[in-house]
Each structure stands twice: as structure tokens, then as C-alpha cells.
Image (tube, rainbow, N blue to C red):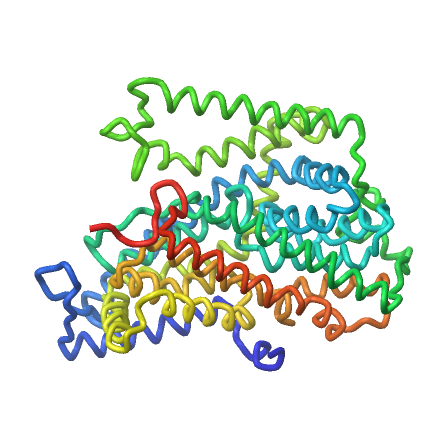
Length: 512
């Protein structure tokens, strides 16, 4: 796995190659006069080629528009600015520490599970913050710290695609999902937004958190004690100050909040309550401008279209209030600097988004996406693979690709371009296929050596076991993979067969 993965080019190169392949294939089909009949349309769609006069004109006139108008950028960047303030002010870290520290020793594994899964709101920082904090809390409670360390990493990684609260990842996935549906012009479906999978996400977070807690409690920790694994760290004092889980003074983070931090956390929660009251008042008053034409909110309304703003508002207000209390936010410049810092962390994605946007736009403009979706859907129907087994096959494929392609945005762009329109033609809402992708996207990433945080985690483990290697780490993490995958598939199956709503205004099957 590691050998094959290391031979893969970086995501930018992968999509550059895919762009060229799509350009060549579309041109060949265009030269041959290929057309495709889209179900529900009265006219055939002619495939356009990039290497034609029309294609070259499209390429030179839409390059910037394709990039700047890329839907994930429109949703992710605003949320990211606010999350950056909440994270860099210290609010998110304080909240996690408070939740850990408040858990009873017997419930600690389950707290680590649920909090670890939801910690993806901190993006990749969760991989650095949660595991050592969990180890420290376990040790303070008289439990094995390595079990907390392993469990914290597993919960963050294997549950990375879901959380109890909407995150920037929800906005990213939704943007890509809507973008690829452009391959089916005039096709009626429910728009996908940052809360389109929210009902499913809440349940998933709780279920996966409980599963993680059970494995930590009944499998991992018992194994640690039986093997007499060390419970004390071997700290290299020269590197101690450089550890990502320590504060600015190089001191280990404590689950115990100072009086100032506790006060800041209380006021930030109160601020969130006030924001909630204001939003409810604005949405519930008669003739509210956030209602739709029928006076409701579903399936579309200005309220649902304001999800990005609402998520942005919560994180920004809570971060600023906390920062003002503890002193990390003294003026507007501090807020701006925090936002700048969050964007700096996203520079690699902003570069990758350039080629992703060009690929998605080309896929839609040429008609290759429509061609692939129509013929793919027809093939699945011809072999009778159209029900939940087809969705399960999609999930398994995502899990296998996840071993080699760690970037969630890259893999979802790759898979969504083909499978979202294909399953839409079979009658499935894009939001449901996005939920299915979440199931396959996370569980296997904690056992692939291509996950960059595996090396970080190995360093954390070697504090207790200096001779531990990648194989040692993977053997400790494997017990989480199959239970997480199985539990999540069962949960999706319940949603499918009970026809439950995935989120506000988003169901399983396309109506009509």
C-alpha cells in the first residue's frame, strides 16, 4: 500500500492528467458527432470537444470564471475565516478541554469518542490536539494513557467526515456536489448545502463516538494493560517546546481551565444563545423575509440559503467573545490576523482548487459527465444493480480509494463527477450519495501510511514506546476500522430503508 501510494503523483498532477484525458476524449467524441439523450429531455446533447475552435474559445474566456465561481470556494472560505477566529482565540481548544475534563472516568472512553469525532470542526489541528489531551485525561483518571492516545486519533480520523455541528467540510462537500450536477442541465434535484446531511451527521457522530468508546474501553485499553505497555512518557526536553500539543510556553496543555478561560467559555456560550434567539426571532416572525413564497422553510427558502452566514456568525461571535475575555482578541486587527492565519493554512487547497475547478467545469461543459452518467446508469440498470447494493459498492470503492487518496476534496471531486449524476439518473438525491461518500471516506484513512498525521501520531506513541514503529501503530488502529465501517453502513441502510430525511429539505430519493 505504501509503495503504490508513494508512486502516485500529488493531487494537482492527478487532476491535471485527468483534465488532459477529458480534453482528448471529449474532442474525439465531438469529432465523431457523438450525442447523448438525457432522460427527461426532448433533445439529444451533443458532446463538445476542448480541442476545437469552440473549445479553445471556451477555455481562454472562462479560466478565471471557473476558478472564482467554484462553489466550494463560495461556501468554504467564509466559514473558514470564522472558524479561524474561534480556533486561534483559543475557544475551540478550551471547549474540548472542558468537555474532556468534565467526563466521569467510567464514561471517559465514550467522551473521547464523541468529542474526537466532532473535533473535525478544528480541521487537521484536531489530529494534533485531541490524542495527547485524551492521553493526559486518561492518565489523570487512572486509566492507560496510550489507550486514550490511540482512541483519540482513531475517533478524529475514522470519523473525520462527520460532526455534531456543521463544519467547513460540510460546505466543501456541498459545493462540489452542486458543481458536478451541472453535467445534467435542467435536472430537478434538491440543492445541497452545509446542513443537507445534518440529521444523518448528528446520529453518525453519536453512534461512531459510542462505538469508538466501546473499542477503547473493552479492546484497546485491556490490551495495553495485558501487554504491560508503559504509562509514562520519555520526553526529549530539547524538543518539548516544539510539540504541537503544548502552549506558547512549551507547557503541556491542561484539561483544567483557568478562571479566565472558564469565564470566556461561559460568555461565548451565552453569546451563542443570544445569536440563536435573534435568528429564531428573525425567522419566525410573520411575513419574515427568510421564509419562502408559501410561508415555510422547506424545501427551499432564504433561511436555508443563509446557512453559510449562520455558521459563520456562530463561530465568529463565539471566537471574538472568548478572545475578548481571555485577552487573545484585543482589537479588530487581532481578528483580521486570525482570519489571515486560517487562510494561510488553506493555501495548498486554494492552489488545488484551481485545477479542481477547471476539471469540474470541463467535465460539465463538454458533456462527458452527462455521457458517463447516462451510460453508467444504464449499465447498472441492465445488471440489476440499482438499489442499496449499488450504494454499498460505491462506499466500498470510496474506502479503497481512501487508502491512496487522502485529500477528501480531491477524492470527492473525482468520485462525485461520475457517481453523483449517475445515481441521480437512478433516482437518488445528490445529498444521499454525498452522505454515502462520508461513510467510505474516513474509516480506512487511519491505517494508511499515506496519511501525513500517521507520522505525527507515531511520534506521539514513541513518547511512551520509543521502539514503536508504523506497524505497531497500525495494529493498534485496525480494531477501529471494521466496526466503524460496519456501524456507519448499517446506519446509512436504516436511513435508506426507512426513507428518513438527511437534513432540512433533503431526502433519499428524487421526488417526481
